[in-house]
Image 1 (cartoon, rainbow, N blue to C red):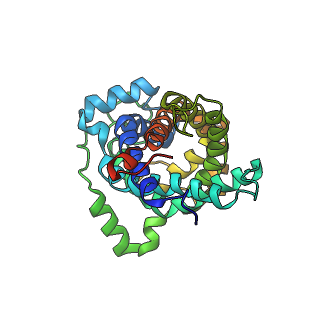
Image 2 (image 1 turned 45 degrees about the horizontal axis):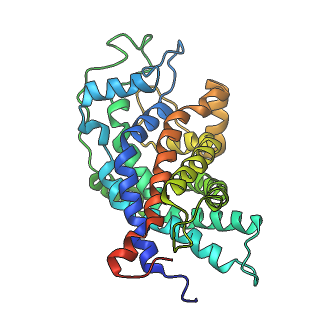
Image 3 (image 1 turned 45 degrees about the vertical axis):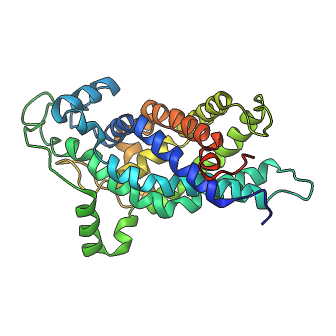
Length: 316
């Protein structure tokens, strides 16, 4: 490994980038989870009619802090997750360069996909725990055996259960062992590898078009932000059908009468048969509103060189 690649500042920058990004967009991510998880009742009725409706009902029923359910585990694990993702991509791009220093498009795709594969060791349990906390306020209220979601028999007045990531994790470990924390791992890998294989090459090419900072090889921060937003928007929309499947497979406690699934293929088939192709776009707008600024912020922070400044190192 030559002196041009240093792990420590990249790991620190990746962690800071993840924390800043998640803090800004987490409430939208919670809404995305609830929209993706909800299933139509016998008459096709839905509890949440739209993104604003979901946000309003969540805020009204659970308050401001209800919008941040699951954020604790996300903030705790987002540091290693984003560090693995961003540093992994940089590492694979570094070792896959040709002798002339070039990186072909297929190698860029492999680099991004490799980074996505590496991150699932952290992403899978993080997403599993986060989804239980995010969806508890929805699933506890839903009863699809009722005929009308506007009736009190369908949306109960039950108090929202008080859960913690620690309690959920310990129960899973006790009942299913370490593999219990990796439910939905296949769908998570499929989503993250595909996302990263699209996102990182697209970001690299968009970012390369920008103006360079004076005395540096890095692009000006605002162009990195815009490039991250565009690449994040494109990649997130592309993998949204997989994300819907992943969310449903990782939801341990369904609302009364809601469908359960036996794996990725069964989930795809069942959702297509019962809800149609439009169901795979559930939460797509929320996911774009989460991922685009999240990666725009993350890439900006990552390339600003905060860690280099703190460590007294020269920025690349």
